[in-house]
Image (cartoon, rainbow, N blue to C red):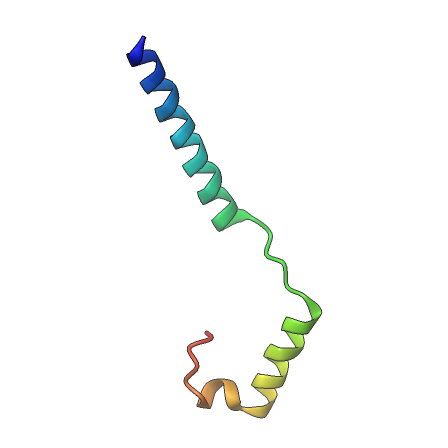
Length: 56
């Protein structure tokens, strides 16, 4: 009986990891209007490339 429970737990953990990786790499990314404005204003002012903030 314990082997059956172990197999079920392994399958559940594997399925959870697969779902996590799928969402991480293939999931839609939400970009809000405020974050677009922030990135555009940083690029236009030149502070994004000069500040060394590590944002890209």
